[in-house]
Length: 302
Image (cartoon, rainbow, N blue to C red; front, side):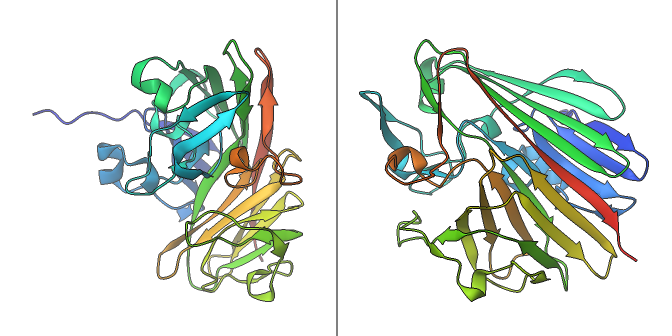
């Protein structure tokens, strides 16, 4: 049996290289400065098997994180989504990361991917509204810029959100810095409870070693900047996100060789929590579009 060939689109600019896997959820398969991985490297077997959850980064559209039990009510209609994350009891991260994307345009340092979703048949349980999503990747000598776009192509209004789920190597001594006003602890059901001021154990307002914070939480009032420093490799990443990304999810599981720092537009399960102040979820009328940009700046440390 012939092995399926996976399309990889490679962008280069000076010392930076970016691999994209459009057919695997529009994911990033690798991001390097020379031979140093700036995002978690995707195993070859994961690419062959289409395992999006093992890639370097994937898009979160048309919502980020969890929708409780995959059920929500919107404008008088009840919707039930497929539980799309293994044995997880909630729907998670939208459906764009589980669909193949198409290459609309590409050159040496730039690539635009497109996904058109139509809620027909089983696809309706992934998301019950029609939409068009785009990702624009632009590589320059000093970093990567990703522009996400989500357009409502349904005949009714739809709830909408955006996010990115980049994974980073958890190397010895890796340091993290970001500032946020509050954080949402999780209950036993993995859903957020009321936000609280950021406790000292979870505060990275001053850059410090990542450690083992046991984080899988959404931070509110994020100022749009985060910094990751690999001291031994003498390289740093600075994430700068548009104001639409007013929340930051940090996932740092204990004993794993990766962590995630995710710019997102809204609180986890925001669709079920319309009364939460500043929840961040948007409503797009037919034909309206949501667009936001995040940049991953690369700096060589002295």
